[in-house]
Length: 150
Image 1 (cartoon, one colour):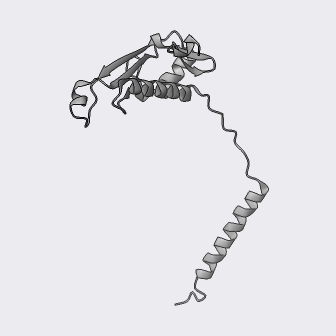
Image 2: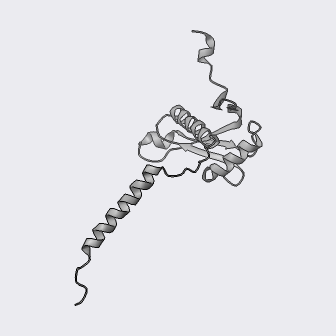
Image 3: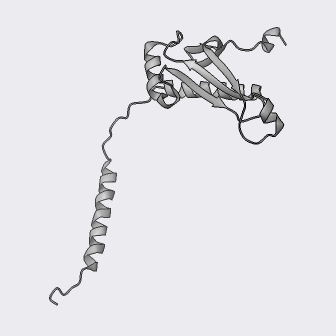
């Protein structure tokens, strides 16, 4: 194996033309909540990832606008994205988890959705709909009483 296999990546690949440098991400650590005994009271295993969308030089103006609109509930008033992870008792595992979620979230938000093309119903579909309406009408006709003078 070469020495490069052991080096930590310096960027996070989002799409084929966008990679966010790790230097633009800020990680904060705090104590996790929940059960865990003395471990949870002493270890800062909860990881918070912060990414300044509004001030990121890696993003184009279109990408920045798309992220701010689609990730509105994750973004604060200053334009910073906040993600948390406290799944495991390991700070490293939580950091990897929050980084993977960050990558997936940005990839999904930047994905350009296909425009829906309106289509016309097929001839067979129209015929089936009309046949079902006729059958339903006949069922309701049979429910009517034959004599109307009471």
